[in-house]
Image (tube, rainbow, N blue to C red; front, top):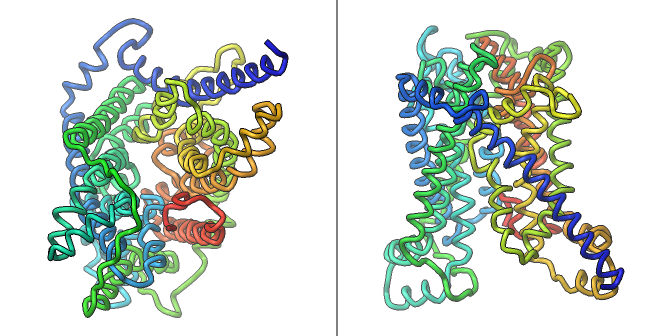
Length: 567
């Protein structure tokens, strides 16, 4: 064997070892530790934890509530998301790019910010209702403090997710089938229900499964709307148990976390079963379906589109901004009473808020940079690797993100409750445990667009360099990285935007000195300081929207499908 060949095999082995080690550390190890705490508490086989969880009435009530709001939110998101995807994909409505940007924005905004924004539209403290003279009397219960309110906001939050998945599927519709049906005299409704929707079944079912998992694992919306109404779901029950009991209740909350994971996995398994019962493969590809001409209905449809944007995006954000400008609870907002004092306080005076801004910026940036550099070699193996274990590798990468965030948070707590072996380093109750959870949870957001970029990349340059004797790491550094970096960096930007205002993970992992923006917003609202919570939220919404616009400026240099709000 030549020295060159030995060197090449050594580099490939080193890359494989590095990737496997990362997967074990950030995916398999925390999940294994979580299961160990439930099945082998204290190192010996026992069913005590499972028994105590199963006989608890609170557990069953929270479980039923979790399933109920999960199904309700999924159904609402499906109806809205599929309807919008059909309208945008197969009709001749105008300004669709601007509409898609606005419709997808709620998905980019943290759930707790969405909940806070909607809460400011109703109730006696609503600045908007006070200005219009429509506010209910002080002390009136906010109507969103209810299961129906949680379902409504979960549907608003995840309808864009359904839209993105279904719209991606509709781009593969065979034009010839639609045109054949049209030439046979079929109207738009018949084409929709006999051709388009049946072919979109895998996309719709897949969107339903992912939305259900997102709904049952959501913490921000049930926390803001459910806790005041004493309506507990499993994530908020875990939060309350952990806040009241600390490390002593870790076994109990580990069982609750596994229960959430089981509910989520049942949704995924049902999706797989439903998709496998029929063959939905499209055996040919063609140009996009010719848009239906709406004729005299186009203007009313376009007006309806923008009314929808006003309802789900503009009005809540207006309520949020107005709340951030009021001086106190119930004060009617006017030119004389409006103030920027709330912004000055959270930016310059409130120590925890200032620290949270810095913590979230550092954590989000570190997670994004790490993911970009890991996603490039990892995507190389997933996209171009030929080994049988590649599929398992891909599933392992997806696992921390596919399961609800609360599961990973509890797993991280268990994993780092004691100092790390050999080194003795303790990261429990520090900002580093949040960083670990972010790295594990959000890595896949950079891997997905990177793999997409690899699939769209011509491999001829890399193969030519290999023939010329360039080693694997040389090819990755000089050829692959420059070509695939835009896609990986776009994934890194998505991670930065997602982690910047994250709450589900950090709510269970933060300690004094390691607060994040999401935690500060939650703490302000729980403490009755809605004006400060609204000020911080308004800053984060503006930051998110500016990042989306900045990414859109470079969309032409990115592979197709990397930015979810762009064609």
